[in-house]
Image 1 (spheres, one colour):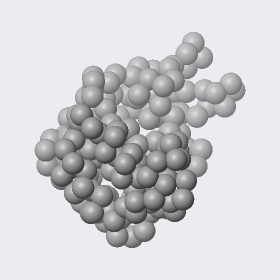
Image 2 (spheres, rainbow, N blue to C red):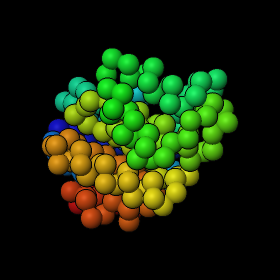
Image 3 (cartoon, rainbow, N blue to C red):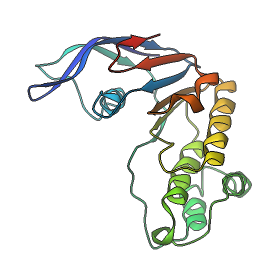
Image 4 (tube, helix red, strand yellow):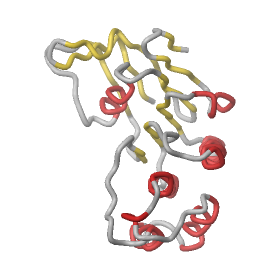
Length: 195
């Protein structure tokens, strides 16, 4: 379970989060929606303990998930390796070649040096990497930006398949429409709507 109880977060004098409270239970599919600057990534960073509440902040945060797969909004990959080789090497002891090939084929990931891939294909590597990790909680921070419509549909289906395995899913997005039919909870920042 994850809970935020009356959380206020400041960066210097700017209040980024204003009295936010919600709970995420095991097996939930949660959408966090909001415009730039509304605090979406700050919430994720607090969940992951990449940042902490300090003496100027308020509230309590609890997260009892130990195994977490995280797809950040921005990530770096080695450039001078082909995309398929990267996945085979990275998951050498975690996933089978058949499992890796399934996602490579499913997302039509081109096998080029990563430095020569389009933005969409680079994002697909991050998605495949996150999906292959064996975790209890999966967090995707803005996974749709730069993806084609078919890949967006496939990602929604793959996240729903994880939910059916009782995995907990959190998706941070500007566009909730892709995932709305799967959601357990919606957290809208800026409009103060937490349902």
